[in-house]
Image (cartoon, rainbow, N blue to C red):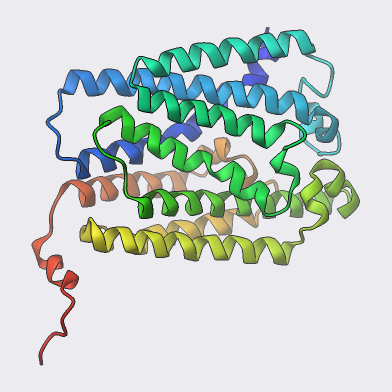
Length: 312
């Protein structure tokens, strides 16, 4: 059972921290009256559902990636590669996780169920032939990072199902996730090429046959700019207080890029980022600052929204 639990990757559940901003945005923007007990229950049940669906995706991902992971210096030791799991057990585990995850999602709301169903569908599109978007250059990053706005929507619908989140927010969140994925690809590509060769990199991930370090860096830079652009639209329309937050967010992007240049970088394994203690403290500061900007109004910033020139 240990190997089947490993391929479900419960250690990757930390990535579901990306649900939290959706919760905070919904509480800060929607005008509903909240019952604390209901919201807390929705958050607990919703997080359980998100983790189960994510584990279903990880299960099928690890099984279908086994023929390619044997060319990766580290992933070649995974249970699916070393014959530590069997097909029947993998598919049974996948179906159980999927059914229980979707049933749990329905307990939150229909809207939340739809989001979790799409999250599960993206796991199929990303991993299963003939679609298998992870093998297609450029599309691979966008299709994997779409899990970010889905988590945002999940957090949002844990709080309210009366409103939809702003499109600018959803797109900004998507491109932010794309930046993280592109940097992950960059760090992973550098590591495999340094350890083996460009040929092995392409055998591990087909999209690497089209990538090189320069392309991946430019790709990640493009997504960073798109993130700031859409966040700018959002803060001008909805929450000017986030103007205080943006420079510190830019600092996080730079810090993450710095980490990606390290040997065996945590950028390749985001679930291991907790080892970057200084960065984790900075992220904690960002969470507090972000929450304050969302929940508190700063009247002196509101004149910046005026569309007239300031007289001398």
